Image 1 (tube, rainbow, N blue to C red):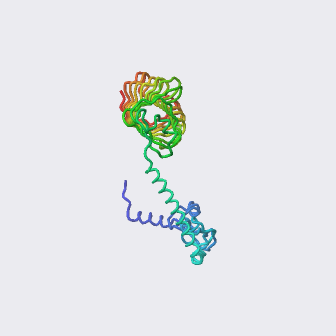
Image 2: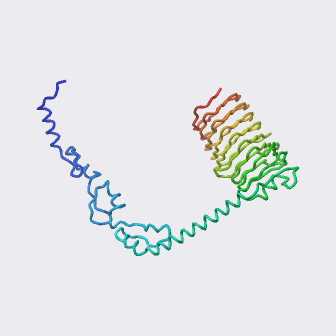
Image 3: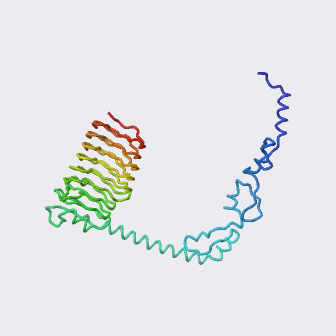
Length: 352
């Protein structure tokens, strides 16, 4: 290809210099497109919508209204504290602040006083909670509740219940924000045709052995629709229905548990349920170690999921979730069954 001569370069430069320029940004355009560009150019001048007579570049109009326009409508800095003056223009604001100095100081003092009372009330509540001794349960020790149910009835929100060693045959419905901790070997199994534990409010369960012996009931059923319920370091088994059922809208933390030997599922996440399920040993549940219903979306990480007679994890149509860094092995029919229309994220799991 021939090299352009100095004459041809000069001619090319002359042609470029002959193109029309945008009158706002000074960039060159073809004659056919320059008008179209000028109508949209970010540097085109627009009249201030507040009619302050300023002509402002389109890309600076927001800044002009926010920081410069004397007619822009502003809120008084004390409006959130109770100043009732509204709709001031910027040019009026300085006068308002100067004339209302004493009023604003009064508003500020009232706000500080109100906040001080709220802080004092919160401190009183915290001190009350800290000063309350844990409620203790033992079938044999004097001066303690004999059943966990009795302790739950006496408990207030925020209480800690310590359950001492023993076998407790009762079914519990948790409707207060409490924590229940095992001290020694604590086993709770249902005494009647009912779930062992139904969680209706935020709670924490730690170190319990839970066993469902009845047909047609779950060992633990989570109904509390919050993000703060925690089940950890428990041993959960069921002779029939699922060990743990997570209902729609619930998102508990389930970690460091043994969940096993259900005739149905280890963990059943119902439609629209969630759950943060990590570091559990989930095994020997007949139908599926984990069953995920339509539109359920749990996070399942760092678990050992094994030895189901059917499936390790079974994801129904439209089921979702994240399965990551799990060991899923020795499940008889499949380690992971994903039905058509299900869309979980599966990554970095070990399966054999």
